[in-house]
Amino acid sequence: NAGVTQTPKFQVLKTGQSMTLQCAQDMNHEYMSWYRQDPGMGLRLIHYSVGAGITDQGEVPNGYNVSRSTTEDFPLRLLSAAPSQTSVYFCASRDPGAGDQPQHFGDGTRLSIL
Amino acid sequence: GNSVTQMEGPVTLSEEAFLTINCTYTATGYPSLFWYVQYPGEGLQLLLKATKADDKGSNKGFEATYRKETTSFHLEKGSVQVSDSAVYFCALLTNTGNQFYFGTGTSLTVIP
View 1 (tube, rainbow over the protein chains, first blue to last red):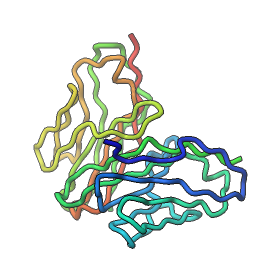
View 2 (view 1 turned 180 degrees about the horizontal axis):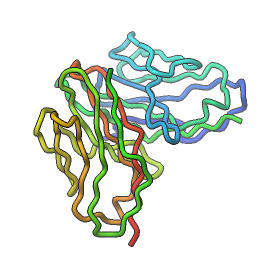
View 3 (view 1 turned 90 degrees about the vertical axis):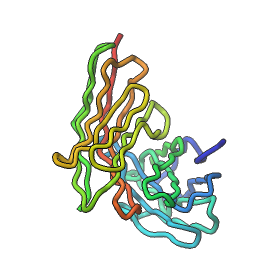
C-alpha cells in the first residue's frame, strides 16, 4: 500500500545544476500535482496534470518543467537550480471521479540549493 | 477568486487544553472543505472533511463544521495531547472539483 512515493527525500545542489524529482503513485489517480512549501507561505502549486499527456501551470511554475507520460509517474525537473528554489517539494494525487475526493501526499523532497 | 485564510501561529497549549484553529474561505459556488495535518518530516495527511453547508467533519477527536453564512471551517478539539503537535492546514476544493487551495498552516505545540 505505497500510495504516493517521492524520491529522493533529501538533495543538495549547486546553483545552475539540474535535477529531476521523482513522483509515483499506485492508486490509478488521474490528477497529480506538485507543490512547494516555504515558511509562512503554505503550499503553492507549481504544476499539475489531469491525466497522462496533459499538464498545466500552477501559481509558481517558473524554473520548473513537468511531463506526464504515464498515469503513475509525474516527474518535476529543475532546469537550472537557483537558491530561491530551496524548499520542500510535495507531490500529490487524487481521484477526481467523486468530485470531493481528498489529495494524497507523498512525504516530500527537501531540496537545498547552494 | 478562491482563497483560504488561517489564524497565525504558532499556537502553544498545555495538554488537555481546548483547541480552536480558525479558518475562513472565499470561494465561488459551493466548495468542499478539508483539514490536513502534517507531522514533522512527513507529508500532509487528511484529518477531516465536509462537503456541504452545516456538515460536520470529525476524526481523532477533532471536529469542524462547514458554516456557509460565516464562510468558516474552524478546527476544534476538546482536549489536546502531546501527540497532536503538528502543523494544521485548512483547504478548499473548488466546486468544479479541479483545484485545491491551501491556507498557510498553523503550527501547534502541546506541552505536557
